Amino acid sequence: MNILITNDDGIYSPGIAALAKVASRFGKVRVVAPDVEQSSMGHAITASRPLFYKKSPISFGDIEAYRVNGTPADCVALGTHLGQTDIVLSGINMGANIGNGMWHSGTLAGAKQAALLGIRGIALSTPAGKTEPDFELLDPHIEKTLKLLIEKPDSLLINVNFPKNPVGTRWTRQAVTQYDGKIVPGTDPMGRKHYWFTVVPLQAADEETDLWAMENNFISITPLRLDLTDEKQLKINRKMTPEPVEK
Ligand code: MN
Image (cartoon, rainbow, N blue to C red; front, side, top):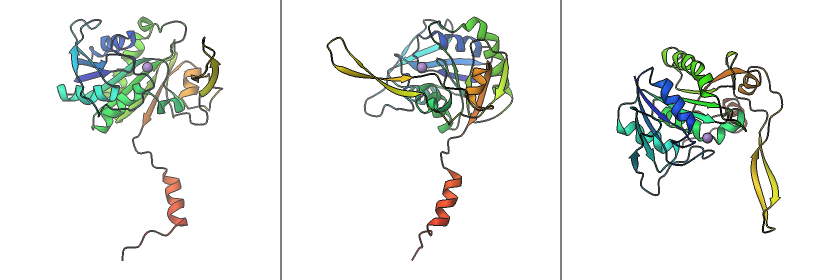
């Protein structure tokens, strides 16, 4: 099993070191990750300048590791070019990636880029607030989850979130009824108005969603799809408006 690992927090994040450590129990790991933080960059790709990679052994011991001047999606495209890849793991992100926050997630984009290339992709995240995640505590949970996902369900794209101290695992759906992004105005030391795009805590969510699972300390596993088509609306629109007729 050839495992490619990326993230969006950058190659020096403790989260990617923790993931590489656990993943190496399942196969041959290659780390290809951004040289600086790319959080909230979503699925951006670098198309207007060249990409470079450099060997980056710090924090990975014997594991092959490279840092790239690009985004998580760039790293997956380049990483799969560098050698055989059977599965891509992205994370472990320092910050949960649930609900509508998934639209911005660079972590998820790494897994999504794999899926676009026809390779299985798994994104992994855990909350990080004032204290750093306890990756020693999470280690057996990460191992158990990777074992389940690598050896059993064969979904192309999966989003995993680990609570601080997991009590179990739930298959979940994406919580889409709430959004946690808000613009908060402030004033800088020079008296100029500025604005922060902030993440605010969400209220209680519907059961079976990723948000609900995390609130109840369950590991949340959500299978995702690439097709964004609203099938229900498509049917309605086709009935409302006649199909174009070929002459
Ligand atoms: Mn991040």
